[in-house]
Length: 117
Image 1 (cartoon, helix red, strand yellow):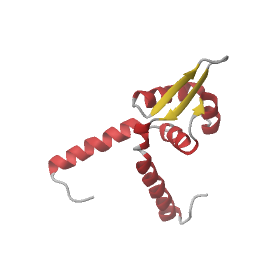
Image 2: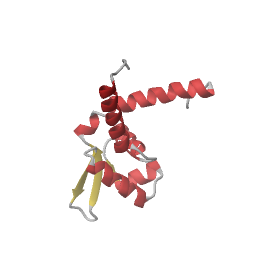
Image 3: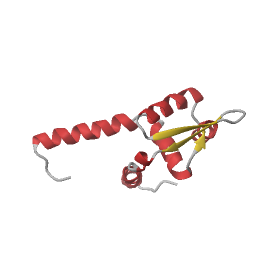
């Protein structure tokens, strides 16, 4: 990143903090990555695939939905079917997630001297 003056640095800091506040925690990125790679999922599918408790998954999905990163679709079936998917707005996070993945792989090599599986 280029050298920033004090005002630009504070603004960049706020922007990064906002980003981290939106996707922070142990589960949000895993949920988003799962939806990015595989498309829409039912609640139970997400819970099993990520190995997350239903209570925690429900809370995380609500927060992601509140931040317009995940959409929730309820189908009037018996039993009711609820599916989750990333939103078009969430697609803008794609480059950020790819950059984080690439940096994480590079970091693993740097620190451990080996690539991840």
